[in-house]
Image 1 (cartoon, rainbow over the protein chains, first blue to last red):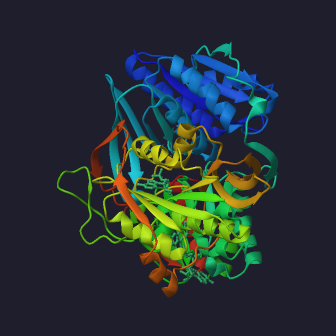
Image 2: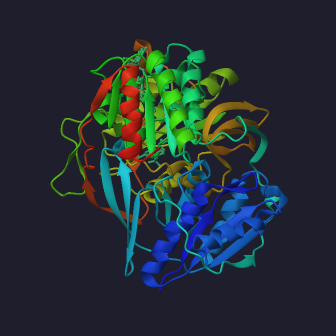
Image 3: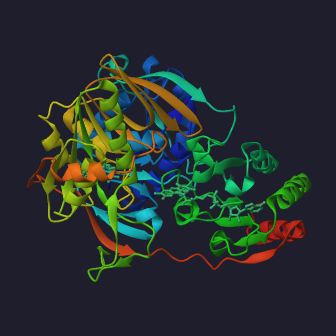
Length: 328
Length: 250
Ligand SMILES: Cc1cc2nc3c(=O)[nH]c(=O)nc-3n(C[C@H](O)[C@H](O)[C@H](O)COP(=O)(O)OP(=O)(O)OC[C@H]3O[C@@H](n4cnc5c(N)ncnc54)[C@H](O)[C@@H]3O)c2cc1C
Ligand SMILES: Nc1ncnc2c1ncn2[C@@H]1O[C@H](COP(=O)(O)O)[C@@H](O)[C@H]1O
């Protein structure tokens, strides 16, 4: 029997979807050996209200650590309390998300505990005491199967790869104290700049509409935004050519040096499909490409390609998507 | 200001990789190697800080076989002052093994800042910087895309999903560098000549015990070949139909 720890990521008082993904994956692992899932939720006072959602997705225990100094991501204090819990709980594995927060937090904890870590995990299996994970390397051109000896093993999951699933458990709430004074952290967030309210993030959106240099000017990104709006559940991404020119912030960049995404639907608008771009999106479930050059490499990976001028095709597609969604 | 930059020699990604006969490593034949892009931006950041301060020293550290000396030389030719080569027969996959060796080297260096890249594209773990920070007990800010240092204190910007954080931190500190912080300079001819005479010390790496092991490498399943369904706006109804009935995304 092996218990599994899950870090339930929250931001601005809200659970992030990756928190449910971590709990869901932890549940599967725990079920493999009849163990329990213990989730840790760190946040400003009031975050405890979110415990139910974690129970709903399979947490037997929800540890809550509330403190004013957790209003923003507080790396040092979050790492300390998580490491203390993970280190003393006898877990076989500790599951995080490969998000901005998880990328920062998980390695600190692994180092504190002197244990192994693998990030950006796309598959995970526990059989007996053998824990193995799948980990894409070399910009996704190679998939490694990695064994993780020693407990607890720290893993972070690629977002949008372990769909949240309901598996109701008791979710016994345990309040835990921060390890040390969270207000004494050396690194402090002095400002948080949030984008347009309610905007879906690339890692969480089921649909991504991404634009490339073929859009020719920043203002033409409106085409891409309108199409995303028509879907209602879409986020906007971009290529490096676009972020380099400052049409979009770097945080929108998808690819080798940007974000890795795998939505259900990826629509590439006037994007050539350079290998460095493909590295960030080729695991998307369905890929659509619109490009005027029928030889563009993006068509090699596109399930559905339309050869044509985006200034003509995209508005028509936006209209058609609006119509189709009205009907449904 | 004393700055250390940890740099990794990584394969060029624009190739078809082959898996070696052991089934658990990549066949290096015909693969070109270079300084990791994120690390080039970290070197550039260090050089800019030194230039702005009008004084300081930039040390470049790389762990791996003797071939990584070439990577160190590249950073020296960009303008770094000296290199340290931590000799190992290969670069381990395990982040902890690398981080412990780098931490042992950095521990008594008296550095004000220690810079890393956010990620190396070959092992794709992105863990080394925060792990070293933890092992050294130093503050750490990861994936920064803006940096200012003044009066012994730093300010940096981090990109989050759909948001940005501005953070303040004291020195000494560990930072990992994201794209967008700067554009790395190319080595000048003069820089390349000068680099040949710069000090490069080589010593054995105190590699930590590996906690994780690659059992097997595989090439990913190929995507089904792409399909062009039509031309121009006239193809839109067909696309909607396929997205609805075949892909079931609308
Ligand atoms: C180390 C390294 C890392 C990199 N990392 C990334 C990364 O993370 N992400 C990334 O995206 N790139 C990355 N790149 C850059 C990458 O190599 C490409 O340069 C970039 O992806 C090209 O962007 P693009 O497709 O927007 O532009 P282009 O390659 O210029 O393509 C524009 C496309 O638009 C089409 N087009 C033009 N006008 C129209 C029209 N009216 N209608 C329809 N189609 C039209 C053209 O046919 C063309 O195919 C990296 C490069 C390097 C060297
Ligand atoms: N062998 C190495 N030698 C020196 N620095 C390294 C080495 N491996 C990783 N690093 C540093 O750690 C960063 C992140 O690497 P990784 O954790 O492998 O993704 C790199 O960008 C380098 O700054």
